[in-house]
Length: 255
Ligand code: MG
Image 1 (cartoon, rainbow, N blue to C red):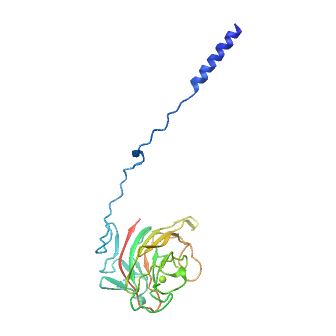
Image 2: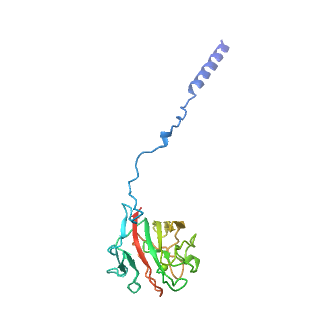
């Protein structure tokens, strides 16, 4: 009798354990459509026309050959650089100019030309610059057969990084900058939580590839980290004595 009871108990325990063993569904077999997302669709942007050098459809045009309405003097008041023949030329005595509008992250297209009769050497030869958010200078300089300190040549973030190439066209020919800039995010103590970064392409050649900017551009001393919000684009009227450079076809896309 006792033995029969033990056998029945053993069987019932086995059945109970078996009943508690769970089974789970196998992963579904993947099909191509499972990794294809149809929304949101990218917005449609009509590219500029290569033949007429026009801006993309969603760009903010900062200079279209006609006037400096998008700009003002960095000191305040009207921008007094000289518009002529569809371009504008630096007017050094009148100082830097800045955009009236301020920007965060952006893609900037800008064309610049060193005059054919340029004189001077090193930094005193076609020096200008484009300041991102009014803080960080991407150098503009005639480095065609003109050496200078490498971290101060065209396409450098001035005094912070040596460009990956010298992609200069000759004086008298137009250089094209395409600059992709990501604005910084700051901690409460004013340090960078996410530092600004910049990619610079000159004439189709990458000079800086997502370079992490260290701080403000300083002529003397190290870069400074100073909290800021959106800022204008600044173009530099450099104090060197060489013949002034010209700009054309400037547009920006907010990112
Ligand atoms: Mg400069």
